[in-house]
Image: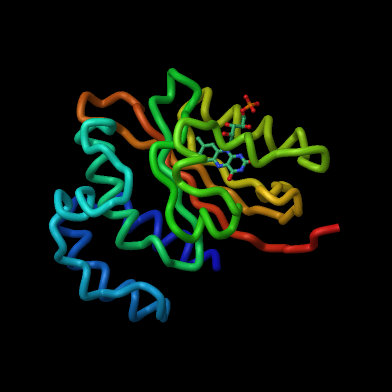
Length: 186
Ligand SMILES: Cc1cc2nc3c(=O)[nH]c(=O)nc-3n(C[C@H](O)[C@H](O)[C@H](O)COP(=O)(O)O)c2cc1C
């Protein structure tokens, strides 16, 4: 799913207008049967308002833009996470339905947590260090590491983290893309 991973990241980085135009094409090219291209044109404000238990004021306008795109890609086969602010240890601001299902954690539980909460005894410290290094120097990184679901079972997660440049040119937030590549649970 490397091609889909790249396409999802590229699509997430588009502005709202370009995103709307790209979504049907993305759905078609990658046969994303669970993503409804008819929602491409939904208004970002309406999307955020419709989110259960989500206070609009609790996220920045920049984060709202990303969340509105993530909701429309929320059932894609790869999970998406928005974290920030980076200087406060990247708490989760939003996690898609797929990521919630992959981890067994609800959005309410994930919000405010750093995604290291998915790590456990079998997690490779070198992979964690690679992510940490990427965050330190604001660069994209991809690693594979063992993560643990809420029920304690583990899965091999291929994670890409992408720095997001905010309106003032600084890196305020990060986008995560998660793919369960091995669901062995022993
Ligand atoms: C956007 C984003 C998504 C992340 N997703 C995951 C993830 O799915 N699984 C994981 O084990 N770590 C994930 N991480 C990495 C941890 O949050 C953390 O950065 C990493 O453990 C290194 O920091 P530490 O050494 O302080 O724990 C993600 C980080 C960011 C910024």
